[in-house]
Image (cartoon, rainbow, N blue to C red; front, side, top):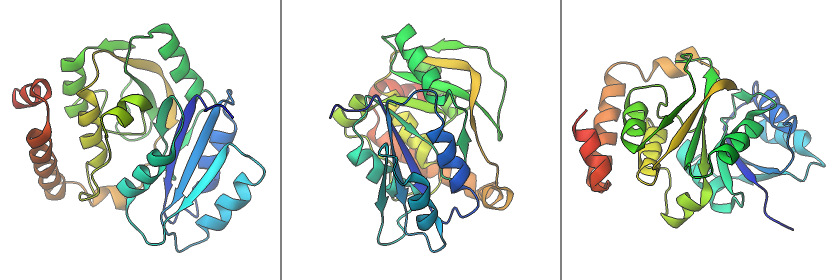
Length: 244
């Protein structure tokens, strides 16, 4: 059996209210050449049962179940470790996507075959209408740092070979801004990136959980993230960050 074009990793922990619309939105994609790897991070509610019922008979979906709760970074890493697609996307278990979420990424890669990253616009938290744009590495880094691209993992379509060849993973020792750290790491290997105008991702703003990261926790996490990044970054990326 040939490898799918897309791999989608869905980390899920206690998503009783949200996992159904999340996985249903992926089942309704306008293209079919994809796999979805759902990582149940030791949920204590009925998330696992809902996943099993939703994907029954759909061989595009597979489940990894953690024996203990390990956090979103570990869940994403578990999914990446078994992914086989040419392209790799992440969808959080409490979010959902438009039917053309994957098709829009594919169209962009086909139109600009030399690009190494495609970013979609989104609905919800920090959604800012943005025109389509091509970024070089320096502009990409600036816009991951503070800008239209952001540090999210869920609004991006990565090339899996870049991740595999450079052994990129999410840092499991931090629990905030881990996706921005991953985005910066990936940007080391990006010469050209495309930002799409169309909004195809729905980010669910959960007030209480997101509010806990505002203020001092955010700046403490950011200092830690930047320290890690600058210790390991290639010169080009490190110089760009030092100048911001």
